[in-house]
Length: 159
Image (cartoon, rainbow, N blue to C red; front, side, top):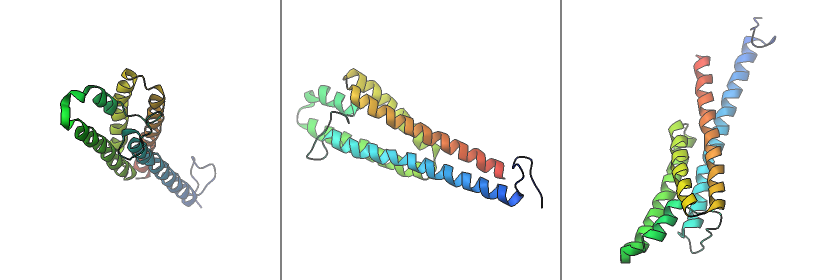
């Protein structure tokens, strides 16, 4: 029976099983954080008016709010443009959710950049509660990004 220095008396097989369990936990936790893209998409549907019910007190999208403030001069295409922009926002979030669940770190980074830029628009429109909701999503996506980075490093050490 061979023991490793890092395992504090564990055998080589026990160490490998523990590391495999750790990698599986990292993968599962990153997928859980990627699910926040779907939560963000669902809240965006509620906050942008894609449904008959519009709840934009806590779940506002800054880019859509700015478009609604300054886009009225577009005339008849205003409402169609607003609906199209809202739909594109939701579709991008859903796509990033699936990509993030597949284990791509860039999806988390893209979500953080997208919501970070939108937070600036939320500050302009004085949507402080929506700003806080955006901050929670960015934090969870940062955790997912970090978990995937740790997973990649753990996989490199395994080989």
